[in-house]
Image (cartoon, rainbow, N blue to C red):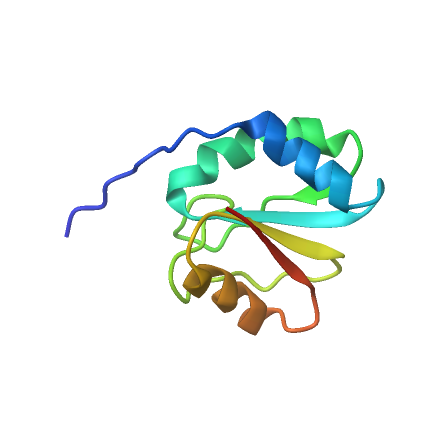
Length: 107
């Protein structure tokens, strides 16, 4: 099996502004994505840390922030999860693993 990393660029500024518009400063957030958008998660991390308590969790052997199919980390004490990606399967895996935390999707 060959595992190919693909990086899709998007408007990171719009993503950050959308988070700021929808979440009060000081909230504790976890950022998650599929591999295509993990680079974007890394690039917005520092900017969002100015206003939020941000975590990019890792479920090994995946990259930090990456979720794949049903592989999702269990994360405690977060106000919300923000999933950057498309398709519901990956986000639903996070929701099943963490049923008491609200989850949001940015596509």
